[in-house]
Figure 1 (cartoon, helix red, strand yellow):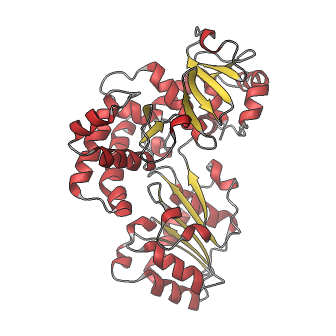
Figure 2 (tube, helix red, strand yellow; figure 1 turned 90 degrees about the horizontal axis):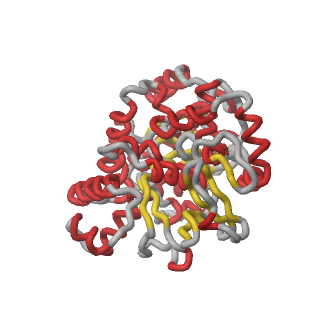
Figure 3 (cartoon, helix red, strand yellow; figure 1 turned 135 degrees about the horizontal axis):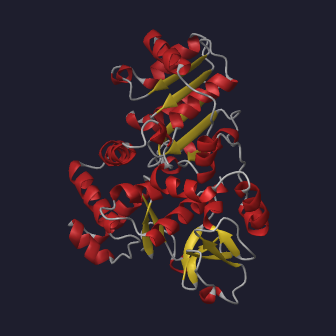
Amino acid sequence: MQILFEQYKRILHETDTSFKRYLFSEIDWSNRLIAITGARGTGKTTLLLQHIKEDLPTDETTLYASLDNIYFSENKLFDFVDEFVKSGGKVLLLDEVHKYAKWSVELKNIYDSFKKLKIIFTGSSVLEIEKSKADLSRRAVIYQLNGLSLREFINIEKSKKYSAVTLDELLTKHTQIAGDISSAIKPLPLFKQYLQYGFYPYYLENKNLYHQKLRQTINLIIETDLPAAQQIDFTSVQKLKKLLYILSQTVPFKPNISKLAERVETTRPTLLLYLHYLERALLISQLKDKTKGLGLMSKAEKIYPGNPNIMSALVEDKPDTGTMRETFFLNHLSLDHTVTSNDKGDFMVDKKWLFEIGGKTKNAIQITGIKNSFLALDDIEIGFKNKIPLWLFGFLY
């Protein structure tokens, strides 16, 4: 255990707290069991270490450990926790739990056995905690960390402290909000940059190599995270890669499930399961029709990349501008809202608001006369009435 403490102290010392992700202030850190899920590279580890630096004692009552550490190849998690608690441990932060076999069962036993121990753990977005055999969903408060929003990207790039807005505020006060922001910065060039490289915090390491690293990240998600969390075999991994490649070259993809299953050389039910895996991994987004059901086995109307940067990294030719805009909108709205397809516009949000996405010359003919309908338009800084700048939706979280 001494080795783990030494490693933890070293990386804690190197942790920067000058910028914190949106989720930091949303988490109720007082809960005894907290789960933080999210895609690889979104900043879950940094979030844990920042919480220690900002809110917890840095003595031996607190410990951070990653379960992909070689230490846990020979030591059981339960025994490790038992020793930690007997040594006075009070708060345990566990990273990458999906890398440890039977993690959910042991965490349940730990939670039930050590009543005064607080546990915060992170795992891949593909973890289905609510369906775990240990039924951790009744014990853990679950949060999901999305990639950087446009707002967060702008705050980093321009050293600003813009706060997030709610969708209600955006729809009713967008002219004022956009005007206040545009008076201080030029949002449109920043928006274009964000679409290319602003979603994952590691863009700060090297913008020139960002797409290469993103492709490596995608490979690791499919080759490592998915098999660890879902117990899929090598053949399935290869088919998942092939499926993602097919989807990335024709986006938004309007799926013919039978033909797509033939191309991937699998069955229709298995293909739907593969799509579910890729969506859980946040590599794709499936836009479904609420009238046809939103379940696992229901066919999507359209399939989009998980975020604009994935599209930029995987599409061989220049990414389609219209699809990039729609991907951005879908990604930002899906975090806290239900987004479905609609034959009158591009997206229906929370069964209440209808949105059509386009460039600044887009007209409102398609949604004319429809209550609570809006145009989300690119290439404008400030909107008017139901015409809202597309970039402003990047301030929702």
